[in-house]
Length: 201
Image (cartoon, rainbow, N blue to C red; front, side):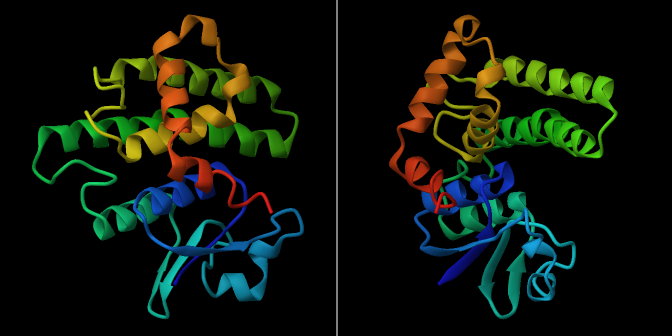
């Protein structure tokens, strides 16, 4: 069975949702990031960078990037996380996916890392606002079908939903009815509900 090493972080939740939506069975290996378990010798043999998530497929295949885990899941379950290869819908879904990972999630991650270093409040505030502005602007990717980029659920919805959940309290929801409706729709998916709690225990 697949083994997913991680904790309740955005990257790990993205990986968990992708695996669950693809219908893949996996076991969660909870990591205690506060105690530095991700830097233990045992974990460093899986990911020398000392980070999570890590997906162990078998003795020869270990995947250490959340995006790569999503693409692995997509390959195992064609059509569940991306529209068919060669379709315009697939390109639009990928466009939305990379928008979330580069314009929204990356800026939020930089802000978090700077906050941990301290004494960089102005830079943290600027990056946080940049991430929120980009997330608000993501409404433009919503299709008439109610998904990000494509007419069906895809990894773009996974990336958008996990970061939206993380910063939900900072968004002006009264001004974002379409984004709110999309968030609620994705939150009701059984696989999403299951995956969002796998690191709670």
